[in-house]
Amino acid sequence: MIDDANGQSTVFYQCASCKSENTFGKKDLLYQDNYDFLPIFGGEEAEDLILFRRPARLSDRYRQIAKSEKIWGKPILKLREGKPVTVLDTWEQIRDVTAAGVPIVTQTEIKNSQTGLRAIIECPVKTMNISLEHKMYQVDTGPIAFPDLTKRFDPMIESLSLAFIVFNAPHFADFVIEQPTPVIEDGQERCKIYHYSNPFSIPAKNTVLAVGTAD
Image (cartoon, rainbow, N blue to C red):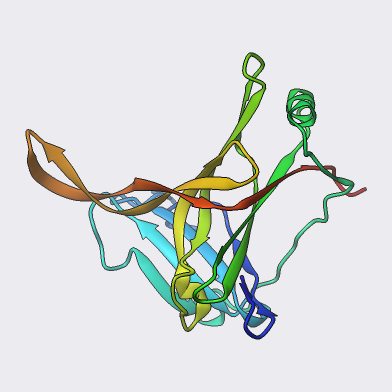
């Protein structure tokens, strides 16, 4: 995330989703009342932490803000540099790289002119759709960390929600955010669950990249 008012930027590192564990137990390694679990680190030296716990029912533990040292200790980031990196700016390039099984990463830049905040969402592509007939591609990836740029948060990591991103053109992206969602049957609300709902579309700058691996 970039604050264009002062030029400062903050990097967030999203971890993979897993299930709630009885870590290092002798047996019963998954909790009976299980839930999805996903942490995101950010701030100076990745000191800030947001934890997402999604059980079967709504819970006040769904979203927790903390300091990383108080949970697991100071994080040690072990990131591999992918190289070479090639910008894929034509459908033919995206088609051929997808067919070759080369890893693909996308960058989606969004901004809010009222708050002066920008964000670049960078993530590996999990699903790439290719239509030879229509000469189109479509990225479908998530969960990703989606920032709310409509206001300023302190700490900034509090702006993040879990979402899926979909796009098939360089100038816009569609998102669907995980949130409490009513389950409607026969016109009546039966309950609320965590679900990716209420999709929306916003202007964006999408870049598709083919990424090699370092030696």
